[in-house]
Image 1 (spheres, rainbow, N blue to C red):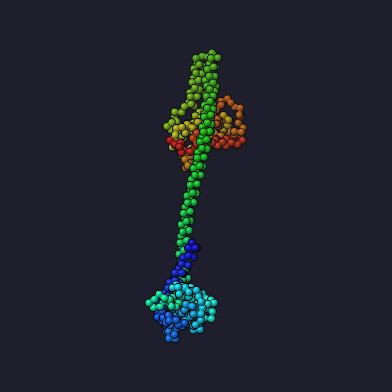
Image 2: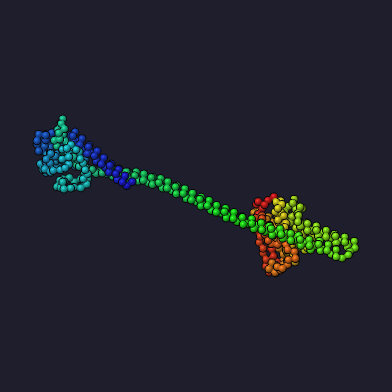
Length: 424
């Protein structure tokens, strides 16, 4: 763009100077040629009359405000006329004069005096110096070359304004093109960045999905193994309950003779034991009741079975939830209370449950017993499902399990299960 601006400025200056030079040539041909025709007769200087006419033309017309000086050159470099009378008759060879006799118009801007103008009375610089051929009337013969000095201050000011305008236009075009290029490059860069970001996100998502699949596969395998262990624990518990209850009673009945009344009482006791065991395996009575009623049933059965007190507090549990979730919470409360009775002597048993504004079910089962650390790890009389069973049930519904215990300060089992995906 700098080269373009310089080229345009140079072209404008050159065109302007040549236009002024051509105008000067036309002036010489139209106004001066008639006064210098006598030079075609071999004269070396204009006659006094013709010289006076030229002086009057330059002094008393509008040219006086534009033209600083003028000369008429002969072919050999002799000055036949000059506004500076001291130069008339002198010979000063010049390449511009030679070009003028060849029929060419030449011009240049003089910013300050040079050696050619040393001693001349020209003072008002800068000047436009123009050389133009003067032809013999009705002929193509060049009889002289006219040189005049036009005051160039206004012209140079106009050229300066034109140059500034040119540079302003070039600068504006440069800025516009640079702006467009910037926008194009910026847009392309943003597109590349967005595509790279999307690719990274897709890659991260693919990796996360792969990791999630691995975790799900591992969780499924662990759940399968836990389910197998839980089933085995259930079978062991059922076997222990039957062995320690009805089987022992029946064995006692077989080992000692009894009267009819005694047999009837023992048979009734066996029947009650079997009914209690079977009631723990199926829960048809909680399918249609709200969650609060299902939890109250678990607590009521624990009271009936153990004869211990259990405090209860329920908040916002009147809504209906999915039956599998009710069974899960029922079994959790049932197993946690059994643990509280078995290991904590049933002291300070308490069940609390609520559904908060985030639709999360929170259930806590606590006691005032000795805590988990003080409980005997050797009590295998009736092996329960235990904490692993509770954890597996809660995990199946996307919930969390927290065990809070302190020595001689009781224990608490706290579970949280989201209703999202587990509703009615």
